Length: 159
Image 1 (cartoon, rainbow, N blue to C red):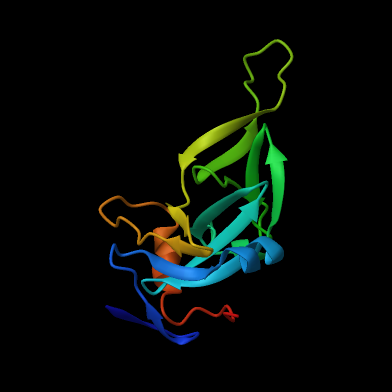
Image 2: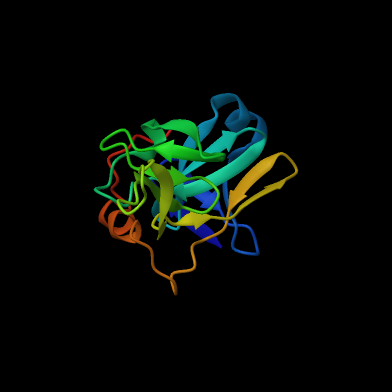
């Protein structure tokens, strides 16, 4: 199976459907790359010894997560969208916000989950290559809207 890719001509799809997105060492060095997976723009982060892949466009208004900062929030590595500072966990794609319970005697802001908003993608490392599994589109996430909107003609330059 040969998949068309706007960046490198053709990309070989592995037999089990995994899409090669880059070399393990290259991604470890750059800490992040943007790649196309089945026409969908995905950002792959290497953070604290682990690979994470998410839709590259923030679920809120389509901000470029590949330009965001990774911060440790409440013990979880999160990407902070550069446009509106939305916080998304790298592990699960949950949107986090800081909120208070006004019924508490002295309300203290605490991090809370909005639920999973950003589609995450399974990453597989094999023989020094990094692969991303195609998304399971039978389940939908808020970020799908922007993934579709920017599909195939995304305005991010792919290296």
